Length: 314
Image (cartoon, rainbow, N blue to C red; front, side, top):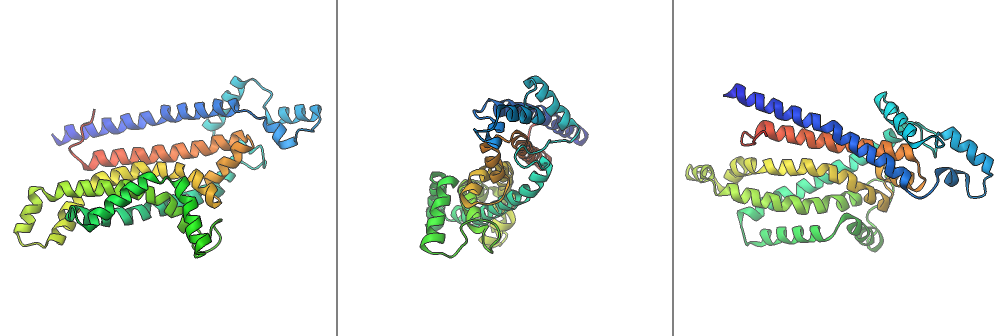
C-alpha cells in the first residue's frame, strides 16, 4: 500500500513539473508579442523625436529591431535556451546584471511583508477562534474586512500621509535609511494578513472541536496548551498552503508598491523598462517573476501532497 502511494506521489510530482515548462513558455510568448504590440518606438524614445531618419535606421538595425518579428522571436527563444537574456536597450548593460541588482530588494520586501502578515494573522486568528463572538473575534473580523477593502496601492499613500507627513517617524522613499522597509512592508503585508487571519480563524475553529482536542482537555491539558500543541499545529496546513501560493502575488503586487515608495526593486525596474519600451528588460523581469511564482507554487503543491495523505493524486 505504501509503495502504491509512493507511485501516486511520484506521478503527481512529475505531472506538476511537466506542467511547469509549457506554462512558462506560454507566458513568455505572450509577453514577447504584447511588448511589441504596445504603442511607442524604443528607438524614438532613446534618440528623441528630432533625430535624423538615417540615425534611427542605424539604431534600429544595431538593436535588431528591423528584422521580422518571427526571427526576433526565434532569436529570443534561442537566447533563453543558452542562458542569454540580451542587453538593456536603455543602459546597454546585460539584462542579467540589471535583474541581479533589483531582485534581492524585491525578495527582501516580499519576505518582510509575508513575515508581517503571518505575525498578525496567526495569533489574532487563533485568539478569535478560541473565543468566537469575543473582542478578539471582532478585531479579527474588522482587520479582515478592512484589509480586503484597502488594496496596497491605496493603503500605501495612506501610510505615507500618516507616518511620513502627519507624523514623520519613518522614511517615505528609497532603501538607504533605517526603517525604509517598514511602510512598503505594511502596504503589502496587511492585505495578505486580512486573508490569512480569516483562514486561521476558520481552520483553528474547525480543529478545536475535533475529538483529539477534547481528549487532550480531558487528560488535564490547559486549554491554551491544547490549542497550541494540537489544534493549531493541524490547522496551519491550509494556512501554509495559502501563504505559499500568495507569496507570488506579494512579489507581483510589489510592482505598484515599489513605485509608490521608490523602492529600488524589480517592480521599479519593470515600470521604467515599460515606459522606455526596453523589451529585453521587460522580458527578463517577467521571466524571473514567472519562474519564482511557478517554483513557489510547485513547491507548495508538492509539499502539501507529501505531508497530507488525504490529497488525491489525479
